[in-house]
Length: 203
Image 1 (tube, rainbow, N blue to C red):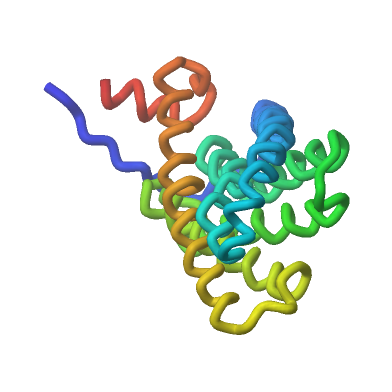
Image 2 (image 1 turned 135 degrees about the vertical axis):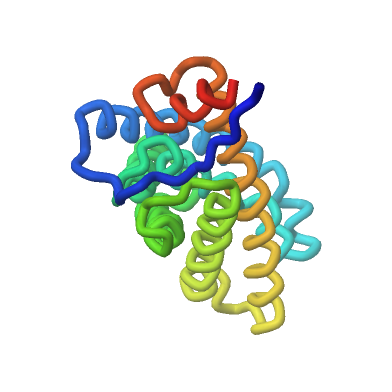
């Protein structure tokens, strides 16, 4: 008989363990390498973006993945921010078209996910929270980019970009990040974390 497991803990996450810090950092490094590779794929889409620049928001959710995955795995205040900042730092070191400004974006994106999990006092780790984190991170980053990169756009284009980025944040970062965590749990890589325990309980 299967058992239904709710992704909720009875009290907020406590102090960080060494394994939490190491895991958040490792996730950040891994995603930083992914970012570096994704930079080339993103650049290859420039001709498409030239037709209607705000459409770039549809694929920008990739940049939010470390924050969502870090939060869902580690489940500690600051985990999303740490994972995202490490990923941004690795991306900057490897080289990117946006140079060191990716560190600002990393902080903003991590903050968006931190707000989402804080709204539930670090007690709920459902798909809905992951999607909310992706949407908030995308929205905050969009507003930053209005001024940092897209100041010449009209307000209508800026709103379209925000909307498309939010959709990408929900699907790629939220749903995608949730799927990544579930896959890691199935592979047995999260045995030291609540996500891994929940997967074993479902089985």
